[in-house]
Image (tube, rainbow, N blue to C red):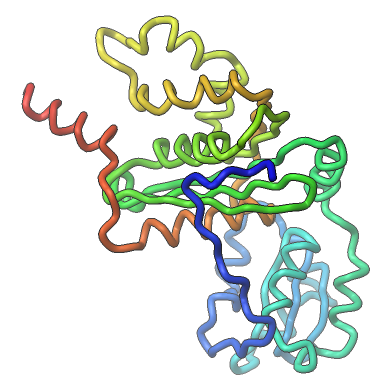
Length: 283
């Protein structure tokens, strides 16, 4: 098996038949839907005036009118077919509106899914990563989803005090470090900080300059010093993916990271806390 064992957490699959409570987060308010910058492609109404699949929110045949004024309406908007299918899998199929599953199944496969399928066919290892701290700095976590020939593995970790960028970097490190042999990798991250630094060669220049910037060590130099050798060990291409835009593996990474950040008794991020302690002593 290609994947190693380092820093791994397996997550149980969601039961296929659950009843959503009244205030379930899956039911989105009008404000949330309208505040999204990117227009969603599909809207599914499980409970409303006319349950079903809609391709617009407003308009004569839009989804908005089907939930307006309906008590305990259950509905959600999606960017992709895959995202919609994953949400519907939480319901008991017998309780869903007639033919809804068939309608969703007939939707076109998303561009992201097509691209991933091509990469998998080429034998590449696909790695999605995400990480963050809340607040920043604050408790943080990272999540990783690896995909090799359709076989998936999830990794995650967290720290009691860290930053967004450090968790994004650690996600990349954990994913690449888990590979047991030299691999052809495409790594997807929603961090432009990381993708640009690697793909544009900035990080190698930082290393060449001893990680120094204006007389001080660059932030996160300890993690960059771990990531670059892994990038040189494997054949890695970094690609930026927009966060929270319907990419299922990216969304899963976000879930893993958020879950880890909320855990109690998280370990110390020595690369962050120790540096901060030293800086305070020098002031």
